[in-house]
View 1 (cartoon, rainbow, N blue to C red):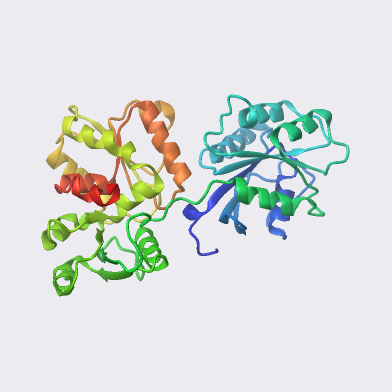
View 2: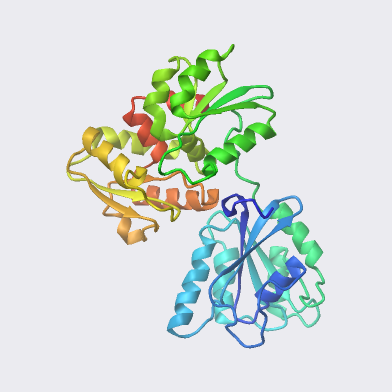
Length: 399
């Protein structure tokens, strides 16, 4: 579990007022002290994330947040950070002291999570009342009954086992794996993994690792080669592989070295499906054919890797775009999701494979782009189009 990337773990966010018992609940869930507990309001400042295994769900990242009633200028920033975490949450747990009457902040949070016009997106919500069932506030008892929530006593860990079991049943299932529905037991897949300046020293990048592991889990055989070795090893095969998967940057060379009827896609395109929904990118592909003059293109990355001289996001794709679409394109490079009012100035978003983000967070971003009317692509889809491999590179995923 410790080696499971955060992007593959279900994200569960704890929300509540100061001193509601969020940190104590986190400690009770883990069965040890992982968060600081104090009677002084505002002990938790920045969100704290810890991972553990939940039966029936698998690895999960629990996020402890600052109180939603925090005060002052810093408090406002902490509240914003806490609520921001709900946008990428797979589940939100409202933690409330059961023996106290609801505060105005709690009333608002309850309405947001459990009201008719719930605003927590697609993430399910769960109510947890601390301080046990004795002396429950009348209104919170009603909340408990209407939501099917739980009562716990943190120091004694009463009700914790039942809560963990409920989380395992309620939280969304894990996102699909890279090869889901594409291969069968006994199939051979061929992975093309260039080792260039951008490759991490001594290891493969995460999409390659996940795809290779998925092949092993599905009892498939894998042949891993660099792009310059592809032709020789492909010709030596007695039977063609079920699927060739390449780094998107090697699309041109790989396509030239294999037969036209060989199913071909890329790691980035596999992750476009894994982290989102492929049809969300159709408007982006269509937009390439009718791009307006002087378009503003956002290149959106999701991790803080060190950019090399010939970086794919800041150099290669912008260069290809100017050669093939619009020479007058303006590029904005960012690792931060734009605010809602910033989206209106964009004509296209091209984002990375998002391997460091959860599917929930990627879908939240795709929803925001769709609502703003901004078409979106990822690196692999653009490079497939630029290399004349559209729709070929998508065909294996559509069968």
